[in-house]
Length: 412
Image 1 (cartoon, rainbow, N blue to C red):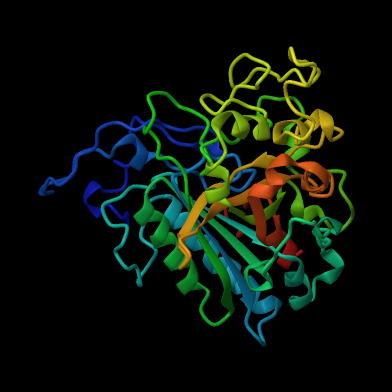
Image 2: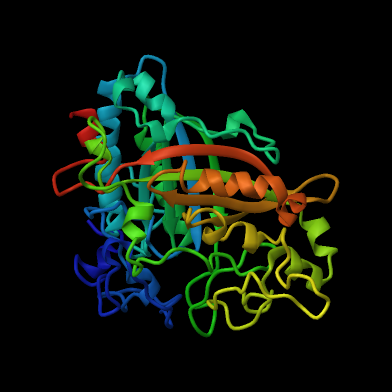
């Protein structure tokens, strides 16, 4: 039954349309608020009615437009749990995700938190950490792409908030819908798995700007301009594992992707002391609109060779946008899909805030690693950030009808 029991089973997917496979979106319009529902509700706003599909080629939550609210949660299989328990858990989680993403009740133990809301672009994405394969007796089928990430000089990693056997990413344009999914996933784990760590994030809400825009991070910078786009000819090759021609035993990852997750603390007090022109020099882009310092608009290609009247490069040699540019890293690219976070203010008055960095690629050793190595050696932004947690997860392709996530691995 729908969470909006009062709209029956069809009203939620109105003329606002659907996000099929996470490739689309809808702007916000006026919503009915605070009005009693008698014979039936008014229509959902476009934000509430937007639905991401569960049975798709690639799991939702990868190319889905950024949502306003996100939760990341990692689990370790409980002592005594193995392949059998993991299989049952993924079956339960997949059924739960399919219901919730369609705007339906989580089941008999539904808490009612999301009552009256539609799907709200909810996505629930599942991944496997390196240790999952040891604990399920599937070490021989573990991809080499899950080899541990190298150490970086900017790392100050907390092992208790890093890695994990299983990883779940939840996103929604409604905070209650997102929390409802988080709580349901945790409860459905039962005795099979225990929470290792959990993090909460947010982005700008749909409709908050006059026109759709690239989001900003907590430093006030436009963040995500250089992302590869699905319309690009090599997008699938860069972001997703090929559906054929891969290593033997790795067929279960066809259509999947690898997620690098990093909790990056922003030293905002230090950053905010910089004058705007110095902040822009660190990034290599204008703060107002995200355009490169060499001119144009946000999506103008930066002229990395341009020299100013002072004889120096307009975009400095250590500017973040220069060092991270694909052309500076042998074409290495990743799809960045982060959430900002704020976990309060410490006793010394310093905000615990920053970025839940999530990037997607067909191979992290060709995507994230070479770029991060270069940033680690000379990025002007490094003095204003600190990497505090890290994880790497294999995210298989979307399940076909009748399948659960990871079935081809667990039963193959």
